Image 1 (cartoon, rainbow, N blue to C red):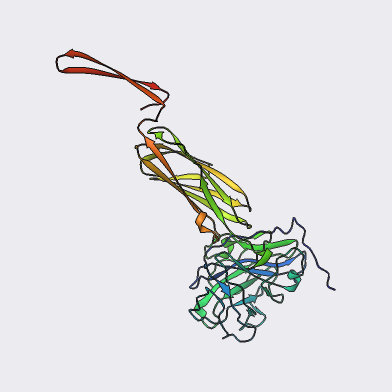
Image 2 (cartoon, rainbow, N blue to C red):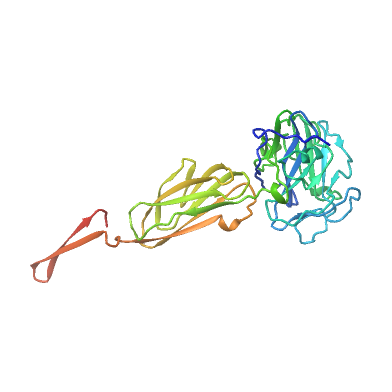
Length: 374
């Protein structure tokens, strides 16, 4: 019986990582994360692909026929691209495995939503306890330290090279994706994960603790950030400070990276301040807050303070986003209506005196008693 190895909890944190649309002609799938080995064992490898469309799956391409059925598609059955595949290269750019066929997907994955992942891993990875079950098993092909991984959704057409991740002192063809990402060591447990989309591997990928996600089952990581607003008691008098409390929560089971909160406040109000300090006022009437990464279940709060300038019903709109495609966009926007009045009901007393000084003329004196202005 083969011995099953476990990566230490400090070395292998389960979660999922952020994505962003690829720079290519076909935006169905992108490379999300790559690992070349763990604890000195180069047989423990995986490549995670992220699906960007709402109804995607990876259909069988077969291991032999490069002109086989659909590759990873959006479920519509059109256009009819030939088999999608992964291609691997060493530090010099020499192909690992079949240079024409690469690694083909041998079965179908269920149709899933945007943000779902396809996990392609070695048997040594699959044998690790507590790791998600891979969607596809591949032989060891990821070059340690320096190399390149390419995803191509149509190997019969050059223009459909979707993207490549080169890393370390890679000396081969980079195929337009900029400088290589950092070297990918096999000591400890380290992966390259996506953090941006600049068409440059050196800035799009960083060394990280591995966090693989599969297409289905316990290994799948949902990406779901949402925002809520506190209920405000109105009416609020014109000129009084009005604060909106915005709470952003990662409702998914995956790490949400580079979370951004955008707040558009209504006409008839003037900006006062926003917190935390990463919130920046964007004239004429918006605030953008960089909230960083949110672990699963974690929340962060922002406050936007305004001064109403007109008596009206003001609608404040807050929207949250992250680098990952969101599995539940319905909770990405929250709106709050607040009634603004000339004088707050029941909070002030007006009294006056009319004194006739000349025939047909009168002087009126009005005194306001209360805590606020009018």
